Length: 266
Image (tube, rainbow, N blue to C red; front, side, top):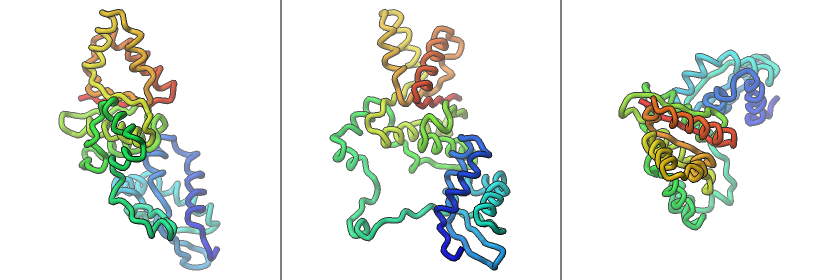
């Protein structure tokens, strides 16, 4: 095994690990890793350095999944292997041709607009998602690391990792920011994605107006055909039986059609 394909080895490890954990756990933690380095120490032992996307992911995997990963890696290598976990982003490999081209500092919304005829901006406007609340400017701390990791997993695999994603916490801890970041990510992945952000109060008012004006079908067309339904302060519907019943049917319609639901509450 002089020439070891790190990507192939790690693919085998992740495929082996995947059958032992839930899809949500795999998306949140294990999919955020890669085989950064591997070194042959002697004829019967390797040393592998596992790169993790953040300190929180590193510490969680070390505590919870060290043995599972080590066993899978030993099986793939066919020999003993020591593990070292480190915080390291996976480097993307680009061709010489692409290196010679000037690259933008970041994937700007202006680039999105140029490439997609303004559809990105239009969808952002219709979705009511705040384009300034992103994962990049979210302040991660000990109090919100779990919520951040779950939200990032949902952003990468909507309607797969956690559905619904329910974010609970006091005022000012960043619940709305995380919900916005996921909604923005869904639209970035698919400019035509039908996403809507509203508050529990706005959801209630739409139902009341639909009943009063006999336009409930219009309400259902608005809410039940979404790829992303984001409701802030869902606690507002507590005690409102008719609203909760309509939300129940809306929730089922969105999730059964493969849409993502995100709720926040204090």
